[in-house]
Length: 60
Image 1 (cartoon, rainbow, N blue to C red):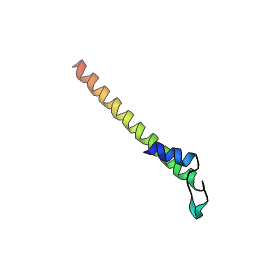
Image 2 (spheres, helix red, strand yellow):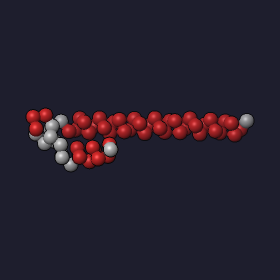
Image 3 (cartoon, rainbow, N blue to C red):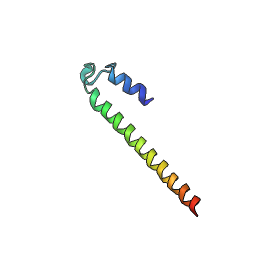
């Protein structure tokens, strides 16, 4: 799961390039967080869209 990956990267249980623990972890971590935020934002927009649609049909 993404949470496990983030936890693993965050706590340095990760060997980056050349096998140095933690090296290169931050980029991957940022990418995971960024992706997660993007997905949450899309889901929220989807919910707002549905809410508006339901409200409109309620008014009709």
